[in-house]
Length: 511
Image (cartoon, rainbow, N blue to C red; front, side, top):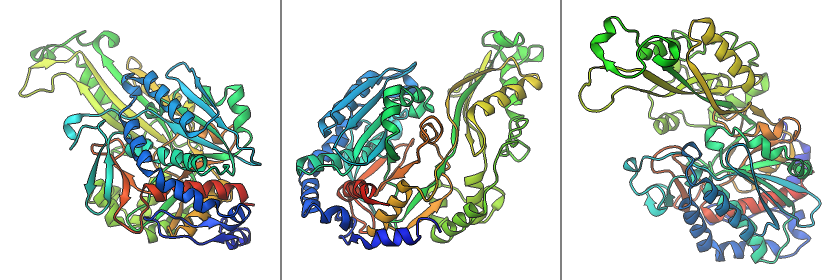
């Protein structure tokens, strides 16, 4: 198994032990710290001293949201994030205009031999405050049974809590007067939650591309420990396409231009049924297998190694816990756990997020709506591309007589893959091992992040997620991030912060 070879064994023998996760002192590289004496202790002390400020930083960041889908407070959110980076010690912080919302390019030159790339997002998903136990942008700290003290708020886990923990690590180096072991190149965007339609413009800007080319790879900070302290290392992620299908009498040339009395349906076409019929062609009779012409032409089956990784993950993860978390009683086709995980990693999807048409209030309104809209997203797997999938979707609809239906693509990018023997993955394995966090390698995240912007040309770097700690509820009510963990197997904010400290040191020394 690559990542556990002789090179890794040698590397691990160069490491020192540390203390428990919840207390926050992860194990550290002897080679890295031996040369600088007690720097690790100074940094750990600075992390603890700065904890209150770190908590307040997360809360305040949550209170400065930007929602790209609603074009709400985006410039303000960008400016606030830039201020956080400057405060952490980045010497250069620059707003990067795009065809949509602005992004950020920042660098911290520590005079180190190696450079690490960091990806941030500063936008968050929409909210319905009525569904929350507390105002979603108030960032309250509450006691959550089984977890400890948590910050509740939109963006808490996705991604402001983990990103703020990374910034806390950078602050700790500065406060301890210890030089970072690597230089940092950071890129951030404000459109991740609408599938990053313009992020490539930031990354491929000449000055950004030049800086990223020096990096070992790119990580997005995360905090995904399960209740047993385990962490899944993803070697890739599916690629999304977010789009809307709109049927209207005005565009169709049939049916009403606006709402009319429902009795007229006896001799007037319905744009709503027209959309429903179009939607029904996108998947097979089972309701989940994509049926778009040529959709599977370029889909790469799981490799033997990927199946091996999934089998190992199935043995070490809890099916019951997964079902409970998702609120489901069975998987598709009543498949067993391992088969279902293989489907999760390998299958492309076409999902309906929402259907909007006509009257949805109490009682009936006896109308024939003139317009209907469906919000959908696809998840793509290797070797599909977003461009290919969009073209096939449009051709499929047109061929079946639905060419009048508007296809509005709001964002999307390709799936991503990173080799398990890359330094950024082996460094994760080393840090998780020393922290006592059980780890599994998984072929790809079923969700998405714009890692393909880094892994594909012209950047061509390995990219992935890293982080200790826990949170949940992304895109859902009562999203949270653990600050003080009551579970000794799971890191709180201090442990999460020190995990990033150790990861940067590991990247600086790993062979």
